[in-house]
Image 1 (cartoon, chains in turn brown, blue):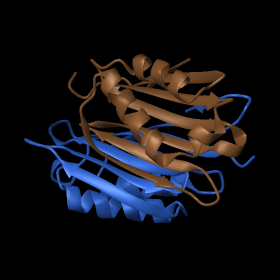
Image 2: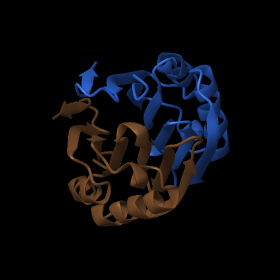
Image 3: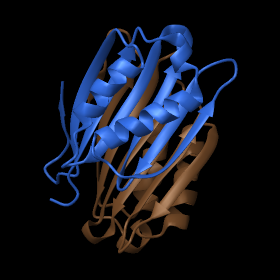
Image 4: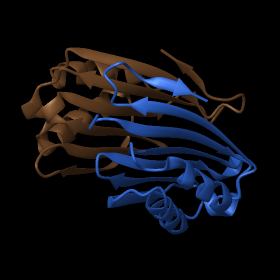
Length: 121
Length: 121
């Protein structure tokens, strides 16, 4: 099915606070993660917040990667939404390392299936 | 909890194909949906594809709304990821109408809870 896609939701805890507060670094990391997953990047938009935290999105063809960070909590919420032939798990592995995460909780959801979404841990 | 957020994944089927192929219109609609949910917009990035389809993201403070469309299939994949005090359901109701969708399948996921993600239909 052309519309089929793989969406991996990830909660990263115990991350390095200084990395989570560095918008330029996170933009590089998230773009690297998109390439690692085999996706084609269309553009990206990252924004630091005051007093801290970053929100950023890497726009892909028909999909995206996003990150929202709370440095003070060591927490980052990430979505790795890719085409059906991409490998979102590779992006996840890269991010575990790049964010210095102690723990990454994932939820996989198949998108674009007329039979419905299938959440799976 | 500061990190708590509400993430609504939606699959829209049976949508109006011409609307799903109009990037400028979808950008207006998605920004309206973000405001309707009570979110604050930081920026947006929308891109039409050849021969058809649109990918777009509205970046919010610590969250986002995204849409990926397949006009030829009448299908749009949407993520309404908002703060805990926002109302993603309102954005969903607006989008059902604005996309001319026959059917909208939702999956709710609580994000940012140390106890873990809770997917719920």
